[in-house]
Length: 184
Image (cartoon, rainbow, N blue to C red):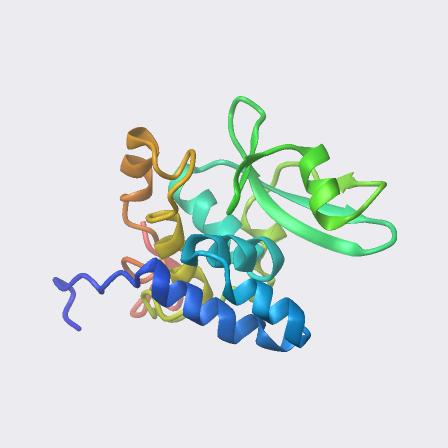
C-alpha cells in the first residue's frame, strides 16, 4: 500500500465476526449462542468492554486527547480501561458510562479508580513499532469508534473528531527511519 492509499475500514459485521472468533474460547456453548444472537454493534461493544478495552481506550485517547482511566478491584485486579471527558464523564465502547454502571457491569463492589493518565496505563497490548492499519487491536478499535451507532459515536461533532487520522492506524506511529522516534 502506498502512502497515498487509505486502508479499507472494516465493517461492523467484519468486526463482529472477529469478536466472535476472538471471544469464542471465553464462552460456554449457551453463552456463545446468546452472543451470536446479538447485533453486530452489540457484539463489538461486548468485545471492547470485555476484552480489548485497552486498545479502545488508546484509540479514544489518540482521537480526543482525553486521559485514560483504569478501573480495578481488590478482588479482581485490573478490570477495565476507558477515557474521561473534560466534563468528567467516562466513555468506553458502550458510550457514556458512570462508575456505578461499570461496577454493576463487572460485578464489583469496591472499585479502585486510577488517576487520569496517558497511554502507559493501557499499553500492555499495543505494539506501536509497526504499521498495520486496521489489522491490529488498535485498528479494530478505531474502526469500531468510527461506526458505532450510539452516543456519542454517532453524533456529528464526535464523528468529526473520530475522522482525524490516528497514529498507528491511519499512518505509522513511529518514523521507521528515525530509530523509533514518535512521528510529529
